[in-house]
Image 1 (cartoon, helix red, strand yellow):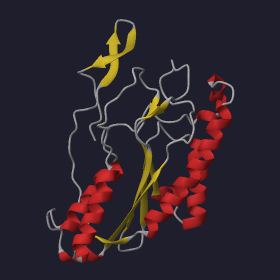
Image 2 (cartoon, rainbow, N blue to C red; image 1 turned 120 degrees about the horizontal axis):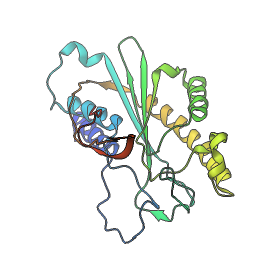
Image 3 (tube, rainbow, N blue to C red; image 1 turned 135 degrees about the horizontal axis):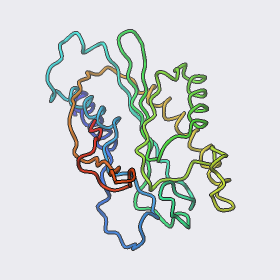
Image 4 (cartoon, rainbow, N blue to C red; image 1 turned 180 degrees about the horizontal axis):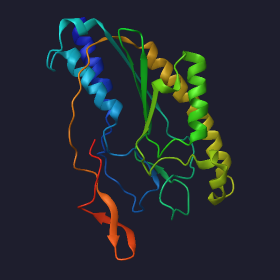
Length: 246
């Protein structure tokens, strides 16, 4: 296998893994929302990784010889599935922690560097979101270790409701968690932050020459759920309401 073929194969592998695909194995559980599973949607890092892959493999439109040596790209991935049962984020009616796993949750990073040496790292994660306190600490550690400022770090959670609860960082909202779950959330958050900081470093260490291209597409998956009523709004499908398709 030639070097170009190896690069194409490796990039396609990472790009494929960076895009979340629903599990195909049969489900045997009858309960809903009690199993770790990633949100069935393509992450932005996965889409960009696919664009990088296409240009390296020669399948994308030519962007000119001058740009071939001006960009670098690097990618990395890490499993972030909790090692033990803990409370899951989303769905206020939950009354018990997770009961199993359909497939692993992941954190993934795409690092980009332009001709002037400016770097950007995009981190996606199968999480409902990042509490501000968590992000602040993550940004500080990334800057201390890799000299990457907060303006050059983009965090993009998928907003899955089948991932772990992180709200223990937000002490004003931690009151609704059962006894013992607050400590589990804090322990998981500490381990998660360490994994994501290392993930950023591995993506930066993986930087190598690449060609970049981009595309803009429309996905008709989103649905507005704010339906107007006589007395205001209710949580219900609104097919005529505004949505962000980007």
